[in-house]
Length: 481
Image (cartoon, rainbow, N blue to C red; front, side, top):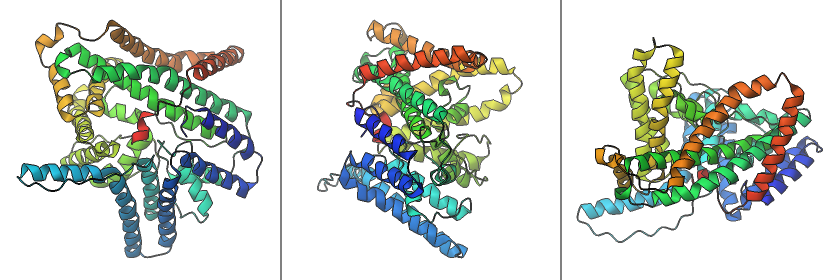
């Protein structure tokens, strides 16, 4: 079951209606059962795997309570080996086998081909990180182990964020399942508005950018001009932003309709003034997870316990730089079992390192000028970073980047005219959305009648467009991770 389908909207409506009218135990069973139903719509045979991952960390965390540090470390190791072992098997084993075979060929050996048919379970990267964070937080003493398995199961499997996040901490959401917030029409209205807005971004914007992106990246790099490369980088950057932020809007809105609040996952990332600032704003829950469970421990810095703030540490000593590259390599490969994702991770590590070097030199520049110049530089740098993320191979990505250093490649255009127009309009749209959020909407808050009328008109138009364009054929990009 995917968000951009009538079946999901029907499930959500039923859950919301029942949730507010059931007692505690039945309410938890409703969430847990609905989440398993939601996941089982994809492939019911992978439900045992989801439940296994959930059970391992529930049992391990319970066993940690009251035990000495040595035993708790062993239990933590069991959790990490079990969860990462499942993730490696399902997500990376084919990749490892193919590269081992290829390396053997380079050495002159001719091993028998390894044929593996492994289906990547939907959302395994997300729920694995979530269960690992729970066990680590119990080990660190940030939270106590949850005794109620159904309540814990709701935290791991909660259907709005099960497939593609946000990656939640138990301390942020588990208590909300146990202590239901008072019913509020405001929460239902705000949640519904977020769901409709997310559907609009997905089915009207992202899905209509996709054919242009697919056509452009199917074109040989040799026939692309430098401006074509910039255009395709921007175009895919907008596609993945509107696609993934749409998912986050629907997830946050769906949870809000039953009174559960998630932290925000995006904050206008393309208006970031530096690579560091970008990763405070993009996929905030994942970048915060990488910060607290990988980067800061490797750097020897005190960790945080909230999935907000993103990657925000900016020290420049060698140990932190080593942790930076290690974290980004892992973050790249987390997105997919392909060398292109490793290149994507290294690209961002280099971008952040370069910013660390120049940051002390610009601190005396007026803030407004810093922001203007920072956005003008950061936006194309971040967009060009999407090339290896979308390219079919490292070779294709390097060829596209190579066009940027060929002066003759700036003298012509190879794509259709409407592609450049669409890209320009999308760039303008991002700035208009930011301006409306930053200045227009806050000023309208002083005029409740105008704001209410605007809300109703927006919901009406959004609902109409979402239903007209609604189709379940185009999955969300992050489903593959």
